[in-house]
Amino acid sequence: MAIAHRPLVRNFILGNFLFTDDQSAMTDSGSLITTGVVDSTGVLELITHLEEALSIRVPPEDMVPQNFDSVDAICAYLARKTAS
Image 1 (tube, rainbow, N blue to C red):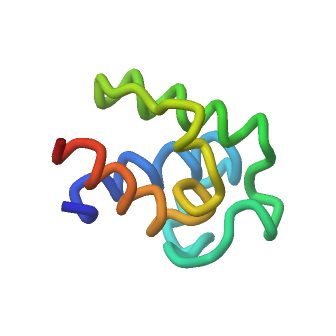
Image 2 (cartoon, helix red, strand yellow):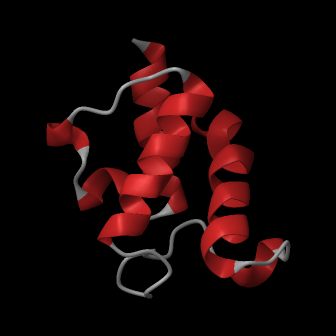
């Protein structure tokens, strides 16, 4: 379920890249990369956090913008990943 991971993802991004607790500071469907919220290093930090928090492994072939460019995309990826 994609919604289950939304707080984990949003809170990490807000606290580590936007430095705010204001949930309205970003939209779930907006691109994190093209808006400059995260860069390639930030994506790797996010992936490391998710791997540790959810006890999953994100293989290199999954580290693509389609999976990590927005909160919605990340949550959808996590839903697929944790369902298997």
